View 1 (cartoon, rainbow, N blue to C red):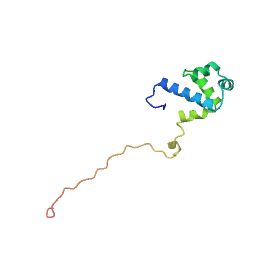
View 2 (cartoon, rainbow, N blue to C red):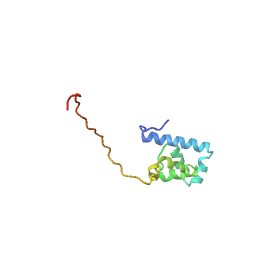
View 3 (cartoon, one colour):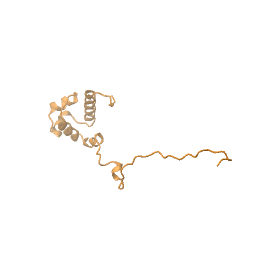
View 4 (cartoon, rainbow, N blue to C red):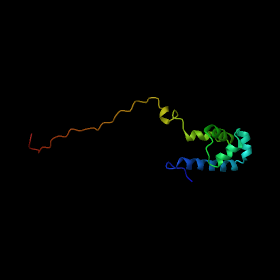
Length: 112
């Protein structure tokens, strides 16, 4: 399943738990090994892999145990490190105005 902007939060949580389980298995690491390395209980890991909520701190511990903590930078990027932050001479944006040209009245060549 692809996570989209229209996905329900429970669907997203279910998909993330499925992906986490697949990643853990391919790592390869058992649930018991993960519990020992992350200091999160085995029952919490089982609940998470079945799609239940385990809390942010437990998720962070599990992600760190699988060396996935760098992926949080992608999830919520640091706004102070934007390309526009590197520009030194930033001027406040000024409203652009439409240029007007004066139109001359058209005359025949013999009129003045």
